[in-house]
Length: 303
Image (cartoon, rainbow, N blue to C red):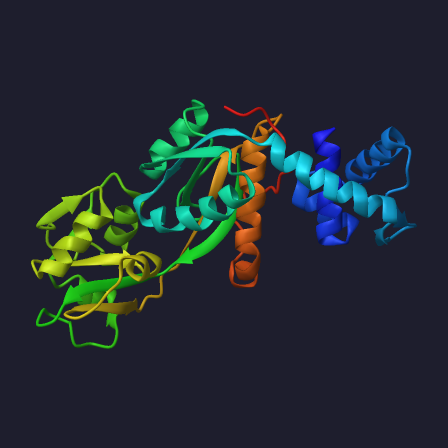
């Protein structure tokens, strides 16, 4: 029954059968059949339709309010997420609105490498992850692209390059850098961009906060995503300088197992991620071929 109620909620939100089916991760005939079954179960007509959606009936509007309460009340439990260090600022943007809708859901958030995230998803140790979608193979996972990671040089006043309005990767390779450890995908991206022109970093860490604090102290510079720089705040005497030439952008997104049935908590999280991504979708490229970019409805066992 819950999945049928979710179909109705999605149709009311999208006002289009095709888009509603896509947001639920089902075919349009499946969604239409589910709503028809709901009408038969309740004994009322819920949707004004022919070949198109013309709105809900008066009974449909009343059932919609009931459906929203039922679906919201049905979600309780615990979700474990893992995120690559550069994506940690995005977690609160996802979990905060999610918990506003589902206050009985608790979260555990782990900082992990992209490879650890894939392993933990495979072993059911986490429910979902935030990681790179377009740089290294993911395998068959449900993905929701969220934003592009943009890079900035974080340094302090008086340090090399500190007075520049922008810098190139070649410039960055000529100064001391504190970097993430080599097991991090962000480090592998940076190593490729620097093309081995940089000296061994004086500081390595698996924590972006450690790198940020060393850059603030003036001991060395570091490379941070724009979102992280904005979250932690960059003020005098620090400098946050765009890195250009070549331009490098990578897509960060939510990943979850490509398995059925999908647990309800994970479905709800994917739906929230999809809503979060909607304002930015025009600026995101399609997920590369070979990735399973799937939008999924809100129904699965909770852990």
